[in-house]
Every structure is written in structure tokens, then in C-alpha cells.
Image (cartoon, rainbow, N blue to C red; front, top):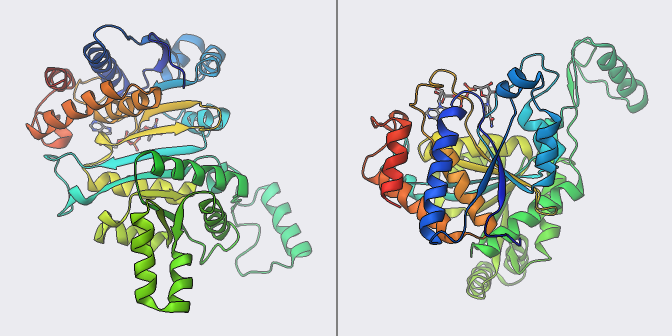
Length: 400
Ligand code: NAD
């Protein structure tokens, strides 16, 4: 990206705790940028309306002006948005992801020492999840039980395709799971590019191809095809050498490939993978997976490092460069507006955004300051501390 010294970046404050955490994030980013670049660089923030605030002002949850501004600016950052009931939307987040074809949901999961964790060795968790964001059962192609469409579809499947499974009648609700080669490949490519940029030497494709052979199995197959375009040593290469020359030769070849800087690529079935990330998290570095698997895996990993309050995320189209960085948690209505929310998820999302801009100095400064605050037990209530959002913000700024 070619980034001016004073880029205009739109932000959506968000609903619920959005009003607590977004100003905190902006204050910290401004302080870190000013400090890191001696006043040479500065973000010009542009507030956009979406969600409840937009509805109150314009009668529209996602006003046209917001969509136009997001189209004009490649990069934006947002707080959580409530899903309006009966607003004509499945979810505002899903709408934004689909509108800008933000095909990769990127979720780095890192442990910050000092955060309470339910596992014995949270420090072993250091992974980045690439979750496909536009396809799979999340595409929103669903038919309600007993609806005319579901009934018609079932009749066609029965008569034209000979599908006569038990309990497959008009009372069945139906969901369609589209998974395409192009959709899978562009996601896996983004995962490889990330691995190369960050010196990671393991990429794992996670799927349920044992059961869903063409959709999830297709993802796995296409993932290995992409691996051929990168300097990789795959589990298939390992098995071929093992079959030909024995286990020791295969192990030696793998060690040599890693010493040569190649990336080791393997795959895991999603249920086993959820076990493995609890038992042997340090084995994994970059994970590429489909939409639903990625949803479960990201939150399960986030829980291991202290919860979604401290896990960042971004939705990125690596081809057009469109990216929306976001808090991964919801609007937390139970604590909204009380000044108690933990702004870390959005702050760490801003770190991802600064890295995306190439402003690594400011990104590193914020990450280190936040880690120092947490390690000094300067945390909000959800992480066992007593600080308000504003006090935590100052604790981070003091450590920049
Ligand atoms: P939630 O994440 O809002 O809350 C779950 C629990 O986590 C609550 O106890 C909450 O207090 C706590 N929590 C969440 N964020 C916190 C923070 N920053 N600091 C401290 N504690 C925090 O999930 P929910 O209750 O299932 O969803 C509420 C609303 O948020 C729904 O309308 C949902 O659609 C929406 N939502 C939005 C997004 C998004 O915008 N990306 C994601 C998930 C849910």
C-alpha cells in the first residue's frame, strides 16, 4: 500500500460498548502515532454512522453515505454492531463482509502474560486463523421448514436426484453449503502470504472432508494445489518418501526442507483439530479453514488466551486491498455505556490496521504498551482487574 502521512481513515463507533471502546482505541492510536513518528504522521479520523446510532439519525442501519465512504476508503475500523431484529438484515457484519467481498477473516491469537486462562500453558498458543468469510453454510442460502421453497426443493431432490433419506420431507429446513475452488484458493493463498511475511513454517488446512467430501474435502484438495505455488514440503511429500524410502528418510527430508526455509503444510479434521489446539497448541502457526469451522476455532482459541475481550480481528480482501478491522466481541449490552468494557480487542485490531498500513513502529509500540499494562495487572474487570475503560486507556498510554 502506498500510504500518505496523513491518511483519512473511517471508523464506526459501534453499538453498546462501542461508545466506550472506540474513543479509547482512537486516543491510544493517536498517542502512539504521534510518539513513534515525531508528529510526522497523523490519522485523520472520519466517523461513519452504522447500527443503532445510524438508525436513530437516518432511519437506516447502514446508510448509503456510510457504504459510499467505505467504498472510497480501502481501510476502516469498527466497534461491534448489534444485529437489528426485523431490520431486513441477517447481520450488519455479514452484510459488510459480503458487500466488500472481505473474504478473509484474520484472527491472530496470542497470549499476553498476566491474563487469566483456563489452560495450563496459554503461552504455547500463538496462531493466526484465516477463516473463509463469504462461502460455506454462512452464505445465507436457507429454506425454512415447511416453506413453499423448501418443499419444492425437497421434491426436486427426491424426484430428479433420487435422494430419499429418512426424515427428509417438507418439515426439513434446508441450508446450502457452497464452497468454490476460487473462494478456497484465494483464502489459502492469503494464509501462505502471511506465513511467508511472518516467517511461519507451518500452515494447516482444517476441514471436515471425511464427512463432507466435495465441499470441505474440496477445500482441502484446493488448499494443497495452492501449496504447490509456494516453497512448501507437504505431509503428502512426507508420506511419499516414507512409502519409498522409510520413515527415517521422510523425517530427514522434512528437517532439511524446514532448514531450507520451506513451509510444512498438513491438514487436520476439524474435530480432531479442536482437540489438538488444547493438547498441542505450539504445533500450529497459520491455520486456513472454512467459514463455520473458523468461527468455532477462533473463539475456542480466544478463550484459551483470556477471551474475546482481548482478541483482535480483521476482514480483508487481499486482492482489492479493502479491509475492515474490528473488535471480535459483541455489543456487550450488560455493561454498555458504563465505562467498564475492555477496549483491548479493538486496540489490538488497530495494531493489525497499523501493520497493514506499514506503520509497524506505532503498531509495535501499542502492542508492547498493552502487554506491559496487562503484565502490571492494570486491567479491566473481565481480566480480573478493577480499572475502568478510561483508566486502562491511560495505563496503556503511560507505557507507550
Ligand atoms: P457479547 O460479546 O456482546 O457479550 C458476551 C459476554 O462478554 C457478555 O457478558 C459481555 O459483557 C462480555 N464482553 C463482551 N465484550 C466485552 C468487553 N470488551 N469487555 C468486557 N466484557 C465484554 O455477545 P452477545 O451477548 O452474544 O451479543 C450481543 C450483541 O452483539 C448481539 O446483538 C450480537 O448480534 C452482537 N454481536 C456483534 C458482533 C460484531 O459486531 N462483530 C459480534 C458478536 C455479537
